[in-house]
Length: 360
Image (cartoon, rainbow, N blue to C red; front, side):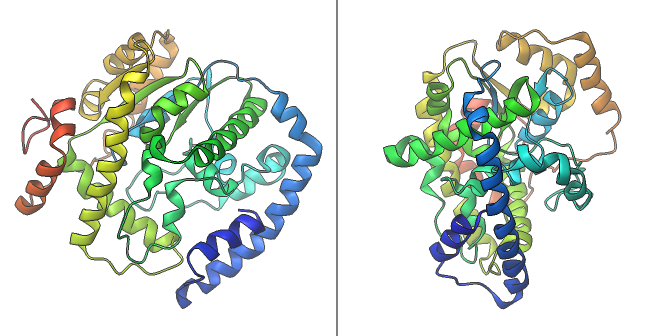
C-alpha cells in the first residue's frame, strides 16, 4: 500500500496493533514509502498510456465461495497462453507493477514461501493471484481490509454484497478495477481471466462495468467448504493480521455463515442479470473427477473455443498432481447440522441434496 492508504487503514482500526505485530507494521510502513514514490513514478511516466489502453476482449471472472475450487480453475485457465492473469507482484503492487516489475518482480517472487499457509497447494512465483488484493493495495473498497484488524471477526464486511453498497463505494471499486485491468492489458496484451471470491457478490455490477464479461462459478460441498474456510481465515489472520485472533470456533463459524448469507444473497439476486452464454456453474467434484470433460463443457457453455493443446495441458496438470489431497467433508455432527441449516439454498441450487455426501 501507499503511505496515505496504509495509514488510513491503520486509523480505521484505531491503531490497535498487537505488540507482536509491531515489526510487521514498521516493515510495511517502510515499504509504503517506497510504494508511494514508485507509484508517483508510474503515474508520471505511464498513467496516460494505461488509461488509453483498451481491453483486448471482455474478461472472464471466476467466482465462488472461498475454498470452492476457484484457485484451481484459475490455475487451469493460466495454462493457456491466450489468457493473462495478475501474478503475485501485479496484485500486491498494482500502483507501480508496470513500471517496476522488470526490476523487482523476480527478486520479490523469490521470497515467496513454497506453499500457501492455508493448504498444501504450491505457491509459484508466476501463479495467478486474486484481484481483490490489488484493491487492498490501491486503497479501494474490499472485504479483505478486515484481515488487518481480525481480533474478533464479529460481523462480515457489507462489501460482500456490493450491489447494496452506496453509489460512491461502487464507483470507487469500478475505477480501481478498470485501472488495474487496463494496466494488466498493457503488460500482457491478451484477454484477462480474473478470480476473487468477493466478485461473487458483484456479478451484476461487473457485467455492467465490463460488457460481455463471462463468469465461471465454482461450487463445492458445503460440508467441505466451511471447515476449510475456517482453516483459511485462521491461517490468514495469524500470519497477515495486525492483531492476534481471539475468537473461538463457534464465533468463527457464525462469522462464516453470516458472510455466506451476505455474499450468496447478492449472488442469487444478481445471477439472472448475466445473459445466458456468459455464465456457467461448475461443481468442484466434477472438475477433479473428469477435468478435461468438465473444462470442455465450461468452454462450450461460455461459447469459447479451447485448443487441443490447452485441453491436453489440463489433463497433464491433474496427472502430475495425483498425490495432492483435497479437504474431505466434515464428520462433525453439530457442524454438519449448522452447515445444513444455513446453507440449504446453496445445497439445493448446486445439487448437494445429501447432508453428508457430495451431491445428488
